[in-house]
Image (cartoon, rainbow, N blue to C red; front, top):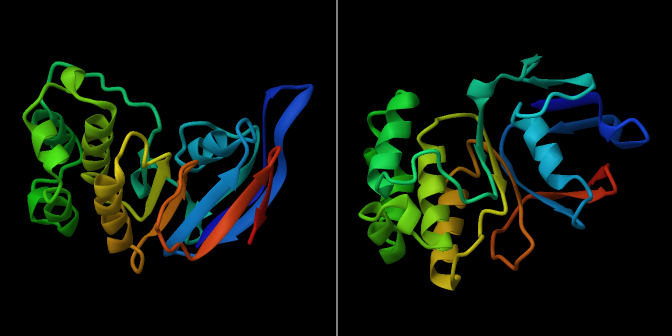
Length: 206
């Protein structure tokens, strides 16, 4: 179980974003994070991914401190530190960094390979890829990190309906075994288990 206890965070002392946030989430299933722009969705996801350290409070996974190794994070920003590598070279690099030499034998790889756009992106330099291509490459490189929690910030960015469907197939692969939290402004067909609603930093679990 993911437990968030008394977490507080602010970008300025005058306007705290989260204050004494306490929440418990199960070890599997899909959770959709909803909220208006500026309500704190991305900040909350980054706190879960250990990319932002809260001012106060704690995060635990199965009664131990949540570590980076237990979280996979896909940012909404289509960027790469290696823009001149081809898509496949980028994925290969991250697979080595994540000590995952067998990623091509995984269900998510074979599912993504059904996408013509993804296959094209594998052979193109990242800098020459479209937004949708970059999103698929970033997703693949993130999944080379095998973890218990998957966090996806705007995962459908730049994807047409066909590739969105393939992306949804990948997300649903892990519904029974992993906890996946995603946020999206656009329509989707993911059958999530529950929803977190964010209202100016206050989060309710629906």
